[in-house]
Length: 143
Image 1 (cartoon, rainbow, N blue to C red):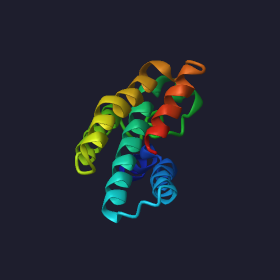
Image 2 (image 1 turned 90 degrees about the horizontal axis):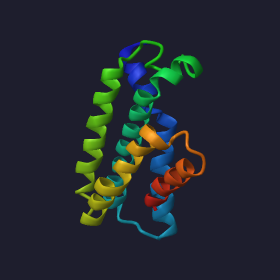
Image 3 (image 1 turned 180 degrees about the horizontal axis):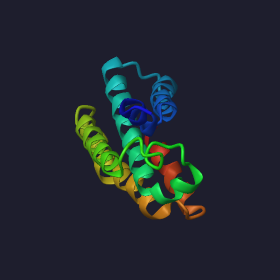
Image 4 (image 1 turned 90 degrees about the vertical axis):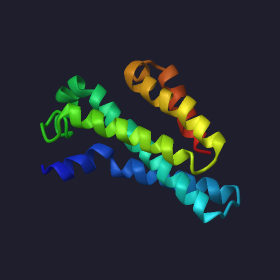
């Protein structure tokens, strides 16, 4: 697998599409048609989702060697260090992009969403109910 394809697979394009779709659905439900804000929000959500996916793969390396050997990290197509760098850069992009939406978005992304995404991958992924509640809270923040 080429590095570009491995990078693409690491970010999980279907998940990114769904995060952008959630922004569009939210805008539609709210009858909010400010295209610039919708675009900024969609790009921010995609960056944060991609960061969380990369960070999750970085954290799940050992279990993925057994359960998901085809993923970019356990297959050797991409290094763990590369995945961590990608995750950090995308988290920073999401935080910076959120400043272009509005201050409350920046606060939510910086103080709630990003820490929860990291906490989920580090500690809560295998925790029944609490892990699910954290994922639901993160997804709910999109709305």
